[in-house]
Amino acid sequence: MDSYILYSITVVFLIFSIYKDKKKTKMALKKSWKAFENILPQFLVVILLVGIMLAVIDTNTISKIIGSKSGGWGVIVSAVIGAITLIPAFVAFPTAALLLEGGAGYMQIAAFVSALMMVGIVTLPIEFKYFGKKMAILRNTYAFLFSFVVAYIIGIVIG
Amino acid sequence: MKKFFKRYRSFLIVLALLLLITLINKKIGFKAFDIATFSMKEMLLVIPPVFILLGLLDIWVPRETMIKFMGEGSGLKGVLLSILLGSAAAGPLYGAFPVAAVFMKKGVKFMNILIFLGAWSTTKIPMFLFEMSSLGTSFATTRLLIDIPGIIIIAYLLSKSVSKDYVNKLYVNAENL
Image (cartoon, rainbow over all chains, first blue to last red; front, side):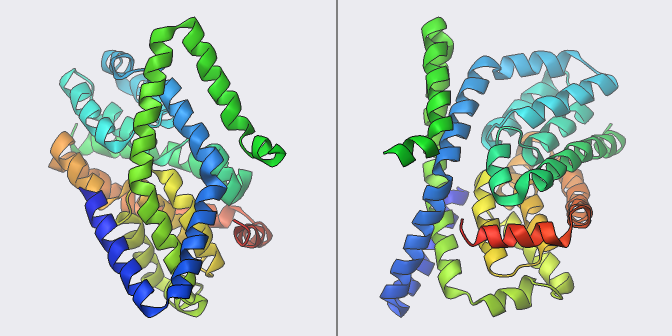
């Protein structure tokens, strides 16, 4: 759904740009391609790694780990799983909903969802390229710790 | 050709690993290929518009304008704009990195780039609606309300934890990305 909106906006801007200046539009598209081509090797690595990872640890495995554990230990395990896996949101949210139904606590789910979205171990090589090692590692560390804050507050609010 | 191998070395290694896995365990190997193809399709769906917008932004929006809205001294306006732009985005977090590079080229303040990155990773509007329907309104809303200050605090801490020199190097590096 959101890709329709994104495409519509892009097409409108692109048409406007061509109308204004063809040469500049060509330059812009060249820049787009260069930026994409620059990162393509890393993209491909990530995609393959995600494939391997999800083939080995499927949602059943995740649900066993998160669903069976409770309390603080469960929250830590959930955050670690969230940090190392890379699952698209439209798979992650329904999975999380199933985990909840399967008996997982809100705190574990909050830690999992938060770490999943903000921490990316698999994508670290890409992040290094743009932000340097120190910044990338710090950002992921802070985001990882932050998932526990989120889990704690969700635990208080929803219980 | 040599250059190609050098750039795609990691990719070729992982590909070889995947082939090896397939030889050992056909089921897992095929499943991994299936999932990779699926992610590839997802990437091809979201990536083109993001990169086209990126190119257009790079060419059409002058550096001065970006500095005015999101550079040093842009204050609260810059912070809000960074959150809005990040939240309106689509696609996985790694799609945000090339956008961040263009922001660096355009002189956007480092802390705002970090806020943008945080918003892209976790407060995306389409995802929020999806989260609400899967995990409930109170879960999604609580998380959003914690995330917004969280993103800003993390961005502040991060921008304070590296030297000016480190940031300058990143900005110079962005010119070549």
